[in-house]
Structure formats: C-alpha cells, structure tokens
Amino acid sequence: MTEEEVADPHTSTPPDRLTVAAHTIDGTHVLTPTGEIDHHTGETLRHALDAITTPGSRVVVDLHQVTFMDSSGINILIAAHRALTDTGGRLRLARPTHTVQRTLTIVGIDTVIDCHATLPQALDD
Image 1 (cartoon, rainbow, N blue to C red):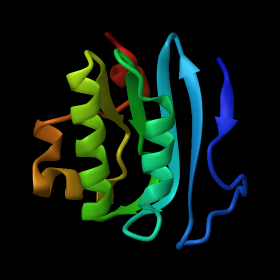
Image 2: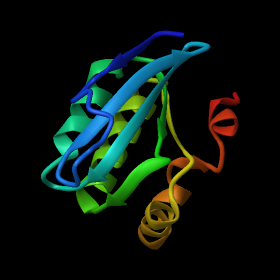
Image 3: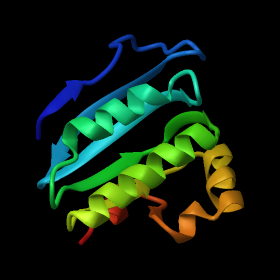
Image 4: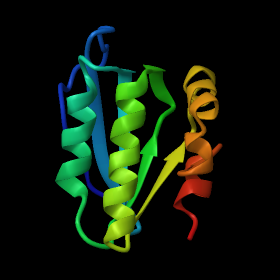
C-alpha cells in the first residue's frame, strides 16, 4: 500500500481548506478528502481524481472526513464517474458522513454512483 498527500499535509483542516490523501489498496485507488467540498475547495478533489484517472482505473472516494459537500462536489463526482465509466473503470463512494449522505440522497447521486457504508464494501469487486 502506498500513500501520499495530494494537498495540504496539515492534520487540522480549516473549514475553507480541503486535503486529499491518496493510497492504493489491491490495485484500487482510494482518495480520502478531509474538510469541506464546495466551490472554493473542489478543485483540490478534481485534481486528485484527475491525477489517478487512467483507462480502466478503479477508484473509491472515502467520504468519512468530509463535513460538507455542495453541488460543486456533486458535479466533480459525476464528471469523474463518467470519465471512469467511459474508459472501463469505476468510481465508488464509501463511508459518507450523515450530512454528505443526505446531500447524495437528495440529489439522487447514490442511485448513479455505487455508495457503500464501509470501505471494504466499496473495495469489494
């Protein structure tokens, strides 16, 4: 398993910052954003997804440390899902916080992108 910090390495994330840790588990890229995903911070997640999106990539975004996500985050996830699906890859979401899960459910993204309660479930083929 390899791990790298894609964004700011601070352990405490101010509300206007987003960090994304990246590592690989059994060939699946796992991104763990920490903080809020909105129009000010979304590019950090987009860049992290772009950096690992290659044809056939398997990607899981572990949302357990995301405290807020607006439509910017939803759009980023939809774009990544489409890009990965078009090249034979896949995007899955794991462990959304209650607040984020509510957003995913309201907009219906959880019916488009596989969303799992645990990381092992999201990693399971």
